[in-house]
Amino acid sequence: MTVKISGKTVMLPACTVIEGECNVDDITFEIDKYYNEVDFSTMTAYANIERSDGTTDKITLDRFCIDDVVYATWTIDSSATAIPGELQVQISFVNEEGTVVFITEKFSLQVQSSIDADYILELGAPKNLVTVTGNTKFDQTYTDVTPVERERILAEMGMEHAEG
Image (cartoon, rainbow, N blue to C red; front, top):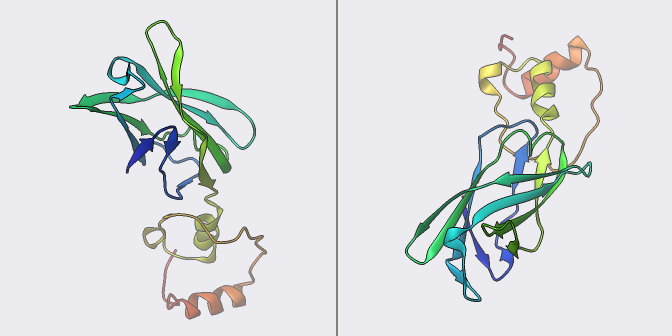
């Protein structure tokens, strides 16, 4: 996904990644080469992250320039998705002396727990039919399911003959 940085605002739509995912999602940030006469094409770009537990990290982004646009790509790895909850992010550009010359406003991603897929597999769905694709609408607590309830649920889903 490519998103524009306009002024200091990252124009990112609502975005969810899954807890523990590694190198699955890329976000490429697009910014004009010059901002207030500062040339971003010669600087190092970083994603400065703060996880929901308060821990922070600074991730170097892959940067390239085409004409008058600088692109900085963040391949989201497991260090960013280790903790479920809100992931606060700011993109910064740092000059050769190590001085931060530009930083965006904070934006956030949601790191969704993979508990739902685990629960569906526990109910008996075949592993090849279960794919984690995004977030659930509400956090839920799960209870143990009796064999009779399991059979009823599988039948409702049209999976009464499923093995697994």
